[in-house]
Amino acid sequence: MKRFNLFELLGIPQLSEHLATVQTALLTVLPDSQSILYEPMRRIVTAPSKRLRPALVIASACQGGNVTENVISACVSIELIHLASLVHDDIMDNSDSRRNVATVHQKEGLNQAILVGDYLFAKANQVAATINLEVAELIAKTIAALCEGQARELADQHNLARSETSYLEAINDKTAALVASACETGALASGLEKHKVRALHDYGIAFGMSFQLLDDVLDVLSSSELLGKPVCSDITEGIYTLPVILTLEGDYRKQLLANIQIATKSQFDSTKVLIDSGSLQKAVDRAKEYNRSAKQAVASFASEELQDLPDAYLQWALNNLVLKKYQLLIK
Ligand code: GRG
Image (cartoon, rainbow, N blue to C red):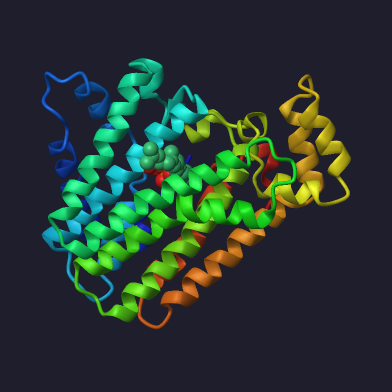
């Protein structure tokens, strides 16, 4: 698989050095090595990751400002929220692996996993407080948004009448809010003008929506080897994402319902229905629309690389994360 190369795509010459500084700073928030939280925390912080959100903090700061110490702190705070949410999300989904590494609740047990997540959230707030009050408030609001998004998803679990609006609101909060805050904190920490802060927020929301739509498509069309986490879990867990919602609204409703309700039906059957109904393609098309909005939001001042990043990610994901047998079916 070709790596998703943010360094090439963003055209920021020093990006790899900045991200190395972020990595060193992330390691400084680990608890004392005597603590039972140390080992799981170390594993999480050093696990392979695209580091998409810190890269967006830096790329946003670079749209007229400099990568200051505060910008690096914003990267750390945002990434800590991301890591904490993954730990808690894996508990809720009872997932065994993430980034091809054992999840904390699986390896160290539920109680330690809860504490690791809480510790990461607390550290995210602590680091944000060193930047300024505006960023500290934004970080706390973002954590609350993630909880609300996850709660909306939970409220709709196994709801076969889940609406598209309800789905879009949930992913706005559970995923797009953090991507938007990555862009916004980068802009705020580097002192960009208000109109750029607002535009970068809008860019982040649109990119985040597209990112989650694609993640939901990959749950159906990828493999655990390619993604480093379990796949085909959404339908079995009762999380009905856009491809399922659209299929249930159309001509293939009966077929999909039969697959969902009969436990012996294989995942392959559901995938086939979702492909035949055209709703996986519709979800990808919707992601492309969000990418166009992201580009438009910052077109007046941002680098072309930043404007094109959402589409570059989408194309990379379709070419590298979708299983070969499905690649010709989705464009
Ligand atoms: C505050 C207790 C508390 C919980 C927060 C659990 C939760 C509420 C929210 C879950 C949010 C979540 C996990 C959304 C999914 C976002 C997503 C698609 C993550 C994958 O991001 P990548 O691909 O990951 O950037 P890497 O591994 O590259 O860093």
